[in-house]
Image (cartoon, helix red, strand yellow):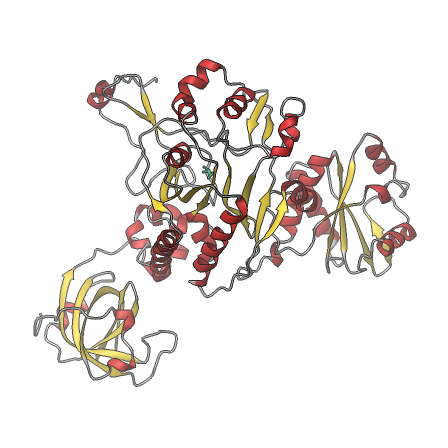
Length: 582
Ligand code: ASP
Protein backbone atom coordinates (compact mmCIF):
# COMPACT_ATOMS: atom_id res chain seq x y z
CA UNK A 1 0.00 0.00 0.00
CA UNK A 2 2.89 2.38 0.61
CA UNK A 3 3.12 4.77 -2.30
CA UNK A 4 6.58 5.67 -1.16
CA UNK A 5 8.63 4.53 1.79
CA UNK A 6 7.84 6.35 5.02
CA UNK A 7 10.60 8.76 6.01
CA UNK A 8 12.47 8.68 9.28
CA UNK A 9 10.25 10.03 12.04
CA UNK A 10 11.17 13.53 13.12
CA UNK A 11 8.08 14.49 15.06
CA UNK A 12 5.55 12.99 17.38
CA UNK A 13 1.93 13.21 16.18
CA UNK A 14 1.03 15.46 19.09
CA UNK A 15 3.83 17.91 18.25
CA UNK A 16 2.75 18.99 14.77
CA UNK A 17 1.71 22.65 14.73
CA UNK A 18 1.16 25.59 12.37
CA UNK A 19 4.90 26.09 11.92
CA UNK A 20 5.02 22.75 10.11
CA UNK A 21 2.46 23.78 7.48
CA UNK A 22 3.84 23.02 4.02
CA UNK A 23 6.34 20.43 5.31
CA UNK A 24 6.18 16.74 4.54
CA UNK A 25 6.34 14.88 7.86
CA UNK A 26 6.43 11.27 8.91
CA UNK A 27 4.66 10.12 12.01
CA UNK A 28 4.00 6.82 13.74
CA UNK A 29 1.07 6.02 15.96
CA UNK A 30 -2.05 4.10 16.89
CA UNK A 31 -5.44 4.59 15.24
CA UNK A 32 -7.50 6.40 17.82
CA UNK A 33 -10.56 6.94 15.66
CA UNK A 34 -11.42 6.64 11.99
CA UNK A 35 -14.39 8.10 10.13
CA UNK A 36 -15.52 8.88 6.60
CA UNK A 37 -17.02 12.18 5.59
CA UNK A 38 -17.76 13.58 2.14
CA UNK A 39 -15.57 11.07 0.34
CA UNK A 40 -12.59 11.68 2.64
CA UNK A 41 -11.35 9.33 5.34
CA UNK A 42 -10.11 10.86 8.58
CA UNK A 43 -7.88 9.11 11.07
CA UNK A 44 -6.93 10.52 14.46
CA UNK A 45 -3.49 9.06 14.91
CA UNK A 46 -2.24 8.94 18.49
CA UNK A 47 1.22 8.70 19.96
CA UNK A 48 2.53 9.55 23.41
CA UNK A 49 2.43 13.28 22.71
CA UNK A 50 -1.15 13.49 21.45
CA UNK A 51 -3.44 13.22 18.47
CA UNK A 52 -3.00 14.29 14.86
CA UNK A 53 -5.64 14.28 12.15
CA UNK A 54 -4.67 12.41 8.99
CA UNK A 55 -6.75 12.96 5.88
CA UNK A 56 -6.92 10.28 3.17
CA UNK A 57 -8.22 11.25 -0.26
CA UNK A 58 -10.64 9.14 -2.27
CA UNK A 59 -7.94 8.44 -4.82
CA UNK A 60 -5.39 7.13 -2.28
CA UNK A 61 -4.21 3.71 -3.44
CA UNK A 62 -4.91 1.07 -0.84
CA UNK A 63 -7.79 3.04 0.62
CA UNK A 64 -10.05 -0.02 0.56
CA UNK A 65 -7.61 -2.00 2.78
CA UNK A 66 -7.29 0.93 5.12
CA UNK A 67 -11.04 1.18 5.54
CA UNK A 68 -11.00 -2.25 7.16
CA UNK A 69 -8.37 -1.62 9.77
CA UNK A 70 -9.60 -1.25 13.33
CA UNK A 71 -8.83 1.01 16.23
CA UNK A 72 -5.37 0.56 17.81
CA UNK A 73 -3.80 -0.51 14.51
CA UNK A 74 -0.25 0.85 14.26
CA UNK A 75 0.52 3.03 11.23
CA UNK A 76 3.43 4.91 9.75
CA UNK A 77 2.18 7.91 7.82
CA UNK A 78 3.95 10.46 5.64
CA UNK A 79 2.23 13.46 4.23
CA UNK A 80 2.07 17.19 3.90
CA UNK A 81 0.95 19.35 6.79
CA UNK A 82 -1.85 21.74 5.82
CA UNK A 83 -4.00 24.19 7.69
CA UNK A 84 -7.40 22.77 8.67
CA UNK A 85 -10.40 24.41 7.09
CA UNK A 86 -12.10 24.31 10.49
CA UNK A 87 -9.75 24.23 13.47
CA UNK A 88 -10.47 21.95 16.42
CA UNK A 89 -9.36 24.06 19.35
CA UNK A 90 -9.77 21.19 21.83
CA UNK A 91 -6.70 19.60 20.30
CA UNK A 92 -3.21 21.12 20.56
CA UNK A 93 -2.58 20.02 16.96
CA UNK A 94 -6.13 21.03 16.00
CA UNK A 95 -5.23 23.84 13.60
CA UNK A 96 -3.48 21.48 11.21
CA UNK A 97 -3.88 18.10 9.54
CA UNK A 98 -1.72 15.85 7.39
CA UNK A 99 -2.77 14.88 3.86
CA UNK A 100 -1.54 11.30 3.63
CA UNK A 101 0.93 10.55 0.88
CA UNK A 102 1.96 7.15 2.12
CA UNK A 103 0.65 4.88 4.83
CA UNK A 104 2.19 1.66 6.03
CA UNK A 105 0.37 -0.71 8.36
CA UNK A 106 3.00 -1.74 10.90
CA UNK A 107 0.83 -3.88 13.17
CA UNK A 108 -2.83 -4.67 13.17
CA UNK A 109 -4.86 -4.83 16.34
CA UNK A 110 -7.67 -7.20 17.18
CA UNK A 111 -10.74 -5.46 18.52
CA UNK A 112 -9.37 -4.24 21.86
CA UNK A 113 -11.29 -5.01 25.09
CA UNK A 114 -11.61 -1.23 25.50
CA UNK A 115 -10.13 1.82 23.87
CA UNK A 116 -7.70 4.00 25.80
CA UNK A 117 -9.86 7.10 25.72
CA UNK A 118 -12.67 5.23 27.47
CA UNK A 119 -10.57 3.93 30.35
CA UNK A 120 -12.60 5.77 32.95
CA UNK A 121 -15.69 3.74 32.01
CA UNK A 122 -13.90 0.41 32.32
CA UNK A 123 -13.49 -1.74 35.42
CA UNK A 124 -10.11 -1.77 37.14
CA UNK A 125 -9.91 -5.55 36.57
CA UNK A 126 -10.08 -5.12 32.82
CA UNK A 127 -7.71 -2.16 32.80
CA UNK A 128 -5.11 -4.02 34.86
CA UNK A 129 -5.39 -7.16 32.75
CA UNK A 130 -4.73 -5.10 29.62
CA UNK A 131 -2.57 -2.51 31.32
CA UNK A 132 -0.58 -1.81 28.13
CA UNK A 133 -3.80 -0.57 26.50
CA UNK A 134 -4.81 1.34 29.62
CA UNK A 135 -1.42 3.05 29.63
CA UNK A 136 -1.96 4.26 26.05
CA UNK A 137 -4.47 6.77 27.42
CA UNK A 138 -2.97 10.22 26.90
CA UNK A 139 -3.46 11.31 30.51
CA UNK A 140 -1.62 8.17 31.63
CA UNK A 141 1.19 8.89 29.19
CA UNK A 142 1.47 12.36 30.73
CA UNK A 143 1.61 10.86 34.23
CA UNK A 144 4.57 8.71 33.29
CA UNK A 145 6.35 11.50 31.46
CA UNK A 146 6.05 13.54 34.64
CA UNK A 147 7.21 10.60 36.75
CA UNK A 148 10.33 10.32 34.63
CA UNK A 149 10.99 14.05 34.89
CA UNK A 150 10.55 14.09 38.68
CA UNK A 151 12.93 11.15 38.97
CA UNK A 152 15.56 12.95 36.93
CA UNK A 153 15.03 16.25 38.72
CA UNK A 154 15.47 14.59 42.12
CA UNK A 155 18.67 12.88 40.98
CA UNK A 156 20.15 16.07 39.57
CA UNK A 157 19.10 18.10 42.59
CA UNK A 158 20.56 15.65 45.10
CA UNK A 159 23.73 15.24 43.05
CA UNK A 160 24.16 19.02 43.13
CA UNK A 161 23.75 18.93 46.91
CA UNK A 162 26.54 16.38 47.20
CA UNK A 163 24.44 13.23 47.74
CA UNK A 164 25.81 10.01 46.24
CA UNK A 165 23.45 7.53 44.58
CA UNK A 166 24.41 4.16 46.07
CA UNK A 167 22.42 0.97 45.58
CA UNK A 168 21.71 -1.35 48.48
CA UNK A 169 20.74 -5.04 48.40
CA UNK A 170 17.31 -6.35 47.52
CA UNK A 171 18.10 -9.78 48.93
CA UNK A 172 18.78 -9.02 52.54
CA UNK A 173 17.70 -9.45 56.16
CA UNK A 174 14.48 -8.14 57.65
CA UNK A 175 14.30 -4.35 58.12
CA UNK A 176 11.85 -3.48 60.89
CA UNK A 177 9.47 -0.83 59.50
CA UNK A 178 6.34 -2.29 61.07
CA UNK A 179 5.07 -4.43 58.17
CA UNK A 180 5.39 -8.10 57.29
CA UNK A 181 8.36 -9.12 55.16
CA UNK A 182 8.31 -10.64 51.72
CA UNK A 183 10.57 -13.65 52.08
CA UNK A 184 12.74 -15.26 49.41
CA UNK A 185 13.82 -18.83 50.17
CA UNK A 186 17.45 -19.68 49.64
CA UNK A 187 18.16 -22.70 47.40
CA UNK A 188 21.68 -23.13 48.69
CA UNK A 189 20.90 -22.75 52.38
CA UNK A 190 17.69 -24.72 52.72
CA UNK A 191 15.30 -23.44 55.33
CA UNK A 192 16.92 -19.99 55.30
CA UNK A 193 15.35 -16.96 53.72
CA UNK A 194 16.27 -13.57 52.44
CA UNK A 195 13.79 -10.78 53.07
CA UNK A 196 13.06 -8.09 50.51
CA UNK A 197 13.83 -4.71 52.10
CA UNK A 198 10.99 -2.82 53.74
CA UNK A 199 13.42 0.07 53.33
CA UNK A 200 17.20 0.43 52.99
CA UNK A 201 17.29 1.77 56.56
CA UNK A 202 20.17 -0.21 58.02
CA UNK A 203 22.24 -0.09 54.85
CA UNK A 204 21.95 3.66 54.52
CA UNK A 205 23.09 4.02 58.10
CA UNK A 206 26.01 1.70 57.37
CA UNK A 207 26.87 3.95 54.42
CA UNK A 208 27.16 6.79 56.92
CA UNK A 209 29.43 4.66 59.08
CA UNK A 210 31.36 3.99 55.85
CA UNK A 211 31.99 7.72 55.54
CA UNK A 212 29.92 8.66 52.47
CA UNK A 213 28.28 11.50 54.44
CA UNK A 214 25.45 12.11 51.96
CA UNK A 215 23.55 9.24 50.34
CA UNK A 216 20.41 8.93 48.27
CA UNK A 217 18.67 6.24 46.34
CA UNK A 218 15.41 6.18 44.41
CA UNK A 219 14.58 2.69 45.38
CA UNK A 220 11.92 0.04 45.62
CA UNK A 221 10.68 -1.06 49.06
CA UNK A 222 8.49 -4.05 49.84
CA UNK A 223 5.93 -4.30 52.61
CA UNK A 224 3.40 -7.04 53.00
CA UNK A 225 0.46 -5.18 54.48
CA UNK A 226 -3.18 -4.47 53.73
CA UNK A 227 -3.43 -2.20 50.73
CA UNK A 228 -5.26 1.10 50.37
CA UNK A 229 -5.43 3.81 47.72
CA UNK A 230 -2.02 5.12 48.72
CA UNK A 231 -0.32 1.77 49.44
CA UNK A 232 1.18 -0.91 47.21
CA UNK A 233 3.19 -3.99 48.21
CA UNK A 234 6.14 -2.58 46.30
CA UNK A 235 6.61 1.14 46.13
CA UNK A 236 9.35 3.67 45.47
CA UNK A 237 11.06 5.96 47.93
CA UNK A 238 13.52 8.80 47.54
CA UNK A 239 15.69 7.55 50.36
CA UNK A 240 18.14 9.99 51.91
CA UNK A 241 20.70 9.94 54.72
CA UNK A 242 23.27 12.53 55.83
CA UNK A 243 25.93 12.82 58.52
CA UNK A 244 27.03 15.74 60.67
CA UNK A 245 23.78 17.67 60.24
CA UNK A 246 20.69 18.52 62.26
CA UNK A 247 17.14 18.34 61.04
CA UNK A 248 16.92 22.06 60.13
CA UNK A 249 19.52 21.50 57.43
CA UNK A 250 17.76 18.39 56.13
CA UNK A 251 14.37 20.14 56.14
CA UNK A 252 15.77 23.00 54.06
CA UNK A 253 17.14 20.56 51.46
CA UNK A 254 13.87 18.60 51.26
CA UNK A 255 11.78 21.77 51.05
CA UNK A 256 13.86 23.04 48.14
CA UNK A 257 13.61 19.66 46.39
CA UNK A 258 9.84 19.54 46.85
CA UNK A 259 9.53 23.11 45.63
CA UNK A 260 11.41 22.26 42.43
CA UNK A 261 9.33 19.13 41.90
CA UNK A 262 6.05 21.03 42.21
CA UNK A 263 7.32 23.79 39.94
CA UNK A 264 7.28 21.16 37.17
CA UNK A 265 3.50 21.48 37.28
CA UNK A 266 3.57 25.25 37.59
CA UNK A 267 2.95 25.36 41.36
CA UNK A 268 4.62 28.00 43.47
CA UNK A 269 5.45 26.37 46.78
CA UNK A 270 6.02 28.80 49.62
CA UNK A 271 8.97 28.03 51.93
CA UNK A 272 9.65 27.26 54.69
CA UNK A 273 6.93 24.70 55.45
CA UNK A 274 4.95 25.03 58.67
CA UNK A 275 6.01 22.86 61.59
CA UNK A 276 3.72 21.36 64.17
CA UNK A 277 4.66 19.15 67.10
CA UNK A 278 2.81 15.83 67.13
CA UNK A 279 1.02 16.67 70.39
CA UNK A 280 -0.40 19.88 68.94
CA UNK A 281 -1.37 18.13 65.70
CA UNK A 282 -3.39 15.63 67.70
CA UNK A 283 -5.01 18.34 69.84
CA UNK A 284 -5.96 20.62 66.97
CA UNK A 285 -6.65 18.12 64.21
CA UNK A 286 -6.97 14.69 65.85
CA UNK A 287 -4.49 13.38 63.30
CA UNK A 288 -0.74 13.17 62.80
CA UNK A 289 -1.23 14.03 59.15
CA UNK A 290 -3.79 16.82 59.15
CA UNK A 291 -5.17 18.30 55.99
CA UNK A 292 -4.62 22.01 56.54
CA UNK A 293 -6.85 22.95 53.62
CA UNK A 294 -9.81 22.39 55.94
CA UNK A 295 -10.33 25.74 57.67
CA UNK A 296 -11.38 24.60 61.14
CA UNK A 297 -9.67 22.95 64.07
CA UNK A 298 -10.81 20.89 67.02
CA UNK A 299 -11.72 22.99 70.06
CA UNK A 300 -12.06 21.97 73.67
CA UNK A 301 -15.47 22.82 75.11
CA UNK A 302 -15.20 20.71 78.28
CA UNK A 303 -15.38 23.71 80.62
CA UNK A 304 -18.57 25.12 79.03
CA UNK A 305 -20.19 21.71 78.64
CA UNK A 306 -20.18 21.33 82.43
CA UNK A 307 -22.48 24.36 82.72
CA UNK A 308 -25.15 23.19 80.25
CA UNK A 309 -27.22 21.16 82.71
CA UNK A 310 -27.06 18.08 80.56
CA UNK A 311 -27.17 14.82 82.52
CA UNK A 312 -25.44 13.02 79.70
CA UNK A 313 -22.55 15.48 79.44
CA UNK A 314 -22.24 15.89 83.19
CA UNK A 315 -22.03 12.12 83.59
CA UNK A 316 -19.36 11.88 80.92
CA UNK A 317 -17.35 14.77 82.36
CA UNK A 318 -17.56 13.26 85.83
CA UNK A 319 -15.97 10.07 84.54
CA UNK A 320 -13.05 12.02 83.06
CA UNK A 321 -14.33 12.57 79.53
CA UNK A 322 -13.48 15.63 77.47
CA UNK A 323 -15.88 17.42 75.19
CA UNK A 324 -14.23 18.21 71.88
CA UNK A 325 -15.95 20.27 69.26
CA UNK A 326 -15.85 21.28 65.62
CA UNK A 327 -17.26 24.57 64.42
CA UNK A 328 -18.25 24.04 60.81
CA UNK A 329 -18.67 27.31 58.92
CA UNK A 330 -21.93 27.97 57.06
CA UNK A 331 -23.44 24.64 58.03
CA UNK A 332 -26.36 25.73 60.25
CA UNK A 333 -28.67 24.92 57.35
CA UNK A 334 -27.84 21.18 57.54
CA UNK A 335 -31.10 19.22 57.57
CA UNK A 336 -32.16 16.81 60.27
CA UNK A 337 -31.36 14.00 57.83
CA UNK A 338 -27.82 15.29 57.26
CA UNK A 339 -27.30 15.62 61.01
CA UNK A 340 -28.55 12.08 61.57
CA UNK A 341 -26.12 10.90 58.91
CA UNK A 342 -23.25 12.68 60.67
CA UNK A 343 -24.23 10.94 63.89
CA UNK A 344 -24.29 7.58 62.10
CA UNK A 345 -20.91 8.33 60.50
CA UNK A 346 -19.52 9.17 63.92
CA UNK A 347 -20.67 5.78 65.18
CA UNK A 348 -19.22 4.00 62.16
CA UNK A 349 -15.94 5.78 62.81
CA UNK A 350 -15.89 4.15 66.21
CA UNK A 351 -17.44 6.89 68.34
CA UNK A 352 -20.39 6.87 70.71
CA UNK A 353 -22.35 9.53 68.90
CA UNK A 354 -22.17 13.13 67.76
CA UNK A 355 -24.04 15.98 69.45
CA UNK A 356 -24.97 19.00 67.35
CA UNK A 357 -25.96 22.61 68.01
CA UNK A 358 -27.12 25.19 65.51
CA UNK A 359 -29.27 28.23 65.00
CA UNK A 360 -32.48 27.60 63.03
CA UNK A 361 -35.15 30.07 61.98
CA UNK A 362 -36.87 29.50 65.32
CA UNK A 363 -33.79 29.89 67.49
CA UNK A 364 -30.90 27.85 68.86
CA UNK A 365 -31.29 24.08 69.07
CA UNK A 366 -29.24 21.04 70.00
CA UNK A 367 -29.59 17.29 69.79
CA UNK A 368 -29.42 17.23 73.60
CA UNK A 369 -31.77 19.00 75.95
CA UNK A 370 -29.92 22.29 76.40
CA UNK A 371 -31.75 25.60 76.83
CA UNK A 372 -31.73 27.88 73.77
CA UNK A 373 -30.38 30.80 75.82
CA UNK A 374 -27.53 28.62 77.08
CA UNK A 375 -26.54 27.74 73.54
CA UNK A 376 -26.84 31.37 72.45
CA UNK A 377 -24.60 32.47 75.32
CA UNK A 378 -22.08 29.77 74.40
CA UNK A 379 -21.99 30.88 70.74
CA UNK A 380 -21.50 34.42 71.91
CA UNK A 381 -18.77 33.67 74.45
CA UNK A 382 -16.77 31.49 72.07
CA UNK A 383 -17.30 33.92 69.18
CA UNK A 384 -19.01 31.33 67.03
CA UNK A 385 -20.77 32.68 63.98
CA UNK A 386 -24.51 32.04 64.13
CA UNK A 387 -24.35 30.42 60.69
CA UNK A 388 -21.98 27.74 61.97
CA UNK A 389 -22.85 24.23 63.05
CA UNK A 390 -21.24 22.97 66.25
CA UNK A 391 -20.52 19.26 66.56
CA UNK A 392 -19.46 17.76 69.87
CA UNK A 393 -18.03 14.43 70.91
CA UNK A 394 -17.62 13.39 74.52
CA UNK A 395 -15.15 10.66 75.37
CA UNK A 396 -11.76 10.15 76.99
CA UNK A 397 -9.25 12.52 75.43
CA UNK A 398 -7.56 10.29 72.84
CA UNK A 399 -10.70 8.71 71.32
CA UNK A 400 -12.52 12.06 71.44
CA UNK A 401 -9.70 13.73 69.49
CA UNK A 402 -9.44 10.87 67.07
CA UNK A 403 -13.18 10.90 66.29
CA UNK A 404 -13.30 14.69 66.04
CA UNK A 405 -10.30 14.49 63.68
CA UNK A 406 -12.01 11.93 61.45
CA UNK A 407 -15.22 13.98 61.38
CA UNK A 408 -13.19 17.06 60.56
CA UNK A 409 -11.74 15.36 57.50
CA UNK A 410 -15.04 13.73 56.53
CA UNK A 411 -16.98 17.00 56.63
CA UNK A 412 -14.08 19.01 55.26
CA UNK A 413 -14.06 17.31 51.86
CA UNK A 414 -15.67 20.29 50.18
CA UNK A 415 -12.74 22.47 51.27
CA UNK A 416 -10.14 20.15 49.74
CA UNK A 417 -9.21 22.09 46.61
CA UNK A 418 -6.81 20.02 44.57
CA UNK A 419 -4.71 22.99 43.55
CA UNK A 420 -4.07 24.22 47.05
CA UNK A 421 -0.92 22.76 48.58
CA UNK A 422 -0.66 22.68 52.36
CA UNK A 423 2.72 21.30 53.37
CA UNK A 424 3.49 20.60 56.98
CA UNK A 425 6.27 19.05 59.04
CA UNK A 426 4.92 17.11 61.98
CA UNK A 427 7.72 16.84 64.54
CA UNK A 428 8.43 15.42 68.00
CA UNK A 429 6.63 12.12 67.62
CA UNK A 430 6.60 9.87 70.67
CA UNK A 431 9.48 7.39 70.49
CA UNK A 432 7.24 4.46 71.45
CA UNK A 433 3.62 3.45 71.43
CA UNK A 434 2.08 0.63 73.41
CA UNK A 435 1.38 -2.42 71.28
CA UNK A 436 -1.84 -3.75 72.85
CA UNK A 437 -1.77 -7.00 70.91
CA UNK A 438 1.74 -7.93 71.94
CA UNK A 439 1.59 -6.17 75.32
CA UNK A 440 4.86 -4.36 74.84
CA UNK A 441 6.38 -1.08 73.69
CA UNK A 442 6.78 -0.68 69.96
CA UNK A 443 8.67 1.90 67.90
CA UNK A 444 6.58 4.64 66.43
CA UNK A 445 9.02 5.09 63.58
CA UNK A 446 11.65 2.35 63.69
CA UNK A 447 14.06 1.19 66.40
CA UNK A 448 16.96 3.25 65.04
CA UNK A 449 15.28 6.56 65.88
CA UNK A 450 16.98 8.73 68.50
CA UNK A 451 15.13 9.98 71.58
CA UNK A 452 15.10 13.73 72.21
CA UNK A 453 18.10 14.40 74.49
CA UNK A 454 15.96 16.20 77.10
CA UNK A 455 13.67 13.14 77.41
CA UNK A 456 16.44 10.54 77.86
CA UNK A 457 16.02 10.65 81.67
CA UNK A 458 12.38 9.50 81.17
CA UNK A 459 13.30 6.36 79.23
CA UNK A 460 13.00 4.07 82.25
CA UNK A 461 10.32 5.84 84.26
CA UNK A 462 7.91 7.08 81.55
CA UNK A 463 8.89 5.58 78.22
CA UNK A 464 5.62 6.60 76.56
CA UNK A 465 6.36 10.25 77.36
CA UNK A 466 9.70 10.19 75.55
CA UNK A 467 9.73 12.22 72.36
CA UNK A 468 11.82 11.23 69.37
CA UNK A 469 13.71 13.40 66.95
CA UNK A 470 11.39 12.14 64.27
CA UNK A 471 9.41 14.00 61.64
CA UNK A 472 6.88 13.39 58.90
CA UNK A 473 6.28 15.53 55.86
CA UNK A 474 2.56 15.90 55.18
CA UNK A 475 0.84 17.35 52.14
CA UNK A 476 -2.93 17.89 52.11
CA UNK A 477 -3.52 15.14 54.66
CA UNK A 478 -1.21 12.59 53.06
CA UNK A 479 2.07 11.55 54.65
CA UNK A 480 4.61 11.97 51.85
CA UNK A 481 7.74 11.38 53.87
CA UNK A 482 9.15 10.49 57.20
CA UNK A 483 12.49 10.26 58.90
CA UNK A 484 14.45 10.76 62.04
CA UNK A 485 17.75 11.41 63.69
CA UNK A 486 19.40 8.06 64.35
CA UNK A 487 20.92 6.55 67.41
CA UNK A 488 24.66 6.37 66.77
CA UNK A 489 25.65 5.26 70.25
CA UNK A 490 25.80 1.50 70.76
CA UNK A 491 24.65 1.58 74.39
CA UNK A 492 21.54 3.61 73.53
CA UNK A 493 20.79 1.38 70.55
CA UNK A 494 21.01 -1.74 72.74
CA UNK A 495 18.80 -0.12 75.35
CA UNK A 496 16.11 0.71 72.80
CA UNK A 497 16.18 -2.85 71.46
CA UNK A 498 15.78 -4.13 75.01
CA UNK A 499 12.91 -1.75 75.66
CA UNK A 500 11.19 -3.29 72.65
CA UNK A 501 11.37 -6.61 74.51
CA UNK A 502 14.10 -8.07 72.35
CA UNK A 503 16.29 -10.47 74.29
CA UNK A 504 20.06 -10.40 73.90
CA UNK A 505 20.14 -13.50 71.72
CA UNK A 506 17.58 -12.01 69.34
CA UNK A 507 19.39 -8.67 69.27
CA UNK A 508 22.60 -10.45 68.39
CA UNK A 509 20.97 -12.59 65.68
CA UNK A 510 18.97 -9.85 64.04
CA UNK A 511 21.08 -6.78 64.56
CA UNK A 512 24.53 -8.03 65.62
CA UNK A 513 26.11 -6.85 62.35
CA UNK A 514 24.53 -3.43 62.79
CA UNK A 515 25.55 -3.01 66.43
CA UNK A 516 29.05 -4.05 65.45
CA UNK A 517 29.23 -1.15 63.02
CA UNK A 518 28.34 1.28 65.82
CA UNK A 519 31.58 0.18 67.55
CA UNK A 520 33.80 1.54 64.81
CA UNK A 521 33.23 5.27 64.61
CA UNK A 522 29.59 5.84 63.63
CA UNK A 523 29.07 9.55 62.91
CA UNK A 524 25.93 11.35 64.08
CA UNK A 525 23.47 11.09 61.23
CA UNK A 526 19.86 11.51 60.22
CA UNK A 527 17.67 10.91 57.23
CA UNK A 528 14.32 10.73 55.58
CA UNK A 529 12.44 8.84 52.91
CA UNK A 530 9.95 10.53 50.60
CA UNK A 531 7.19 8.41 49.12
CA UNK A 532 7.86 8.88 45.43
CA UNK A 533 4.55 7.36 44.32
CA UNK A 534 2.49 9.41 46.77
CA UNK A 535 4.29 12.58 45.70
CA UNK A 536 3.44 11.79 42.10
CA UNK A 537 -0.15 11.00 43.02
CA UNK A 538 -0.55 14.44 44.57
CA UNK A 539 1.38 16.18 41.82
CA UNK A 540 -0.83 14.68 39.11
CA UNK A 541 -4.02 15.11 41.15
CA UNK A 542 -4.77 11.40 40.96
CA UNK A 543 -6.71 9.68 43.76
CA UNK A 544 -4.67 6.49 43.86
CA UNK A 545 -1.00 5.61 43.52
CA UNK A 546 -2.09 2.90 41.12
CA UNK A 547 -2.49 5.63 38.50
CA UNK A 548 1.19 6.51 38.57
CA UNK A 549 2.68 3.01 38.89
CA UNK A 550 3.03 1.37 35.48
CA UNK A 551 2.17 -2.16 36.58
CA UNK A 552 0.41 -1.98 39.94
CA UNK A 553 -1.19 -4.71 42.00
CA UNK A 554 -4.88 -4.71 42.87
CA UNK A 555 -6.01 -3.88 46.40
CA UNK A 556 -5.93 -7.62 47.04
CA UNK A 557 -2.24 -7.76 46.04
CA UNK A 558 -2.69 -9.46 42.68
CA UNK A 559 -1.03 -8.64 39.38
CA UNK A 560 -3.89 -9.26 36.96
CA UNK A 561 -1.62 -8.80 33.96
CA UNK A 562 0.85 -11.58 34.71
CA UNK A 563 -1.32 -13.58 37.10
CA UNK A 564 1.18 -13.35 39.94
CA UNK A 565 1.52 -14.59 42.60
CA UNK A 566 1.42 -17.96 40.86
CA UNK A 567 1.97 -21.60 41.75
CA UNK A 568 5.48 -22.93 41.09
CA UNK A 569 6.55 -26.37 39.94
CA UNK A 570 7.20 -29.25 42.33
CA UNK A 571 10.79 -29.28 41.06
CA UNK A 572 11.32 -25.67 42.15
CA UNK A 573 9.81 -26.39 45.55
CA UNK A 574 12.02 -29.46 45.96
CA UNK A 575 15.10 -27.45 45.06
CA UNK A 576 14.19 -24.99 47.78
CA UNK A 577 13.31 -27.72 50.24
CA UNK A 578 9.80 -26.36 50.64
CA UNK A 579 6.55 -28.27 51.10
CA UNK A 580 3.29 -26.40 50.76
CA UNK A 581 0.85 -27.02 53.63
CA UNK A 582 -2.60 -27.86 52.36
N1 ASP B 1 13.29 4.04 56.70
C1 ASP B 1 12.24 5.00 56.94
C2 ASP B 1 11.00 4.59 56.18
O1 ASP B 1 11.09 3.88 55.20
C3 ASP B 1 12.61 6.37 56.55
C4 ASP B 1 13.73 6.93 57.33
O2 ASP B 1 13.71 6.88 58.56
O3 ASP B 1 14.63 7.50 56.69
O4 ASP B 1 9.92 5.02 56.52
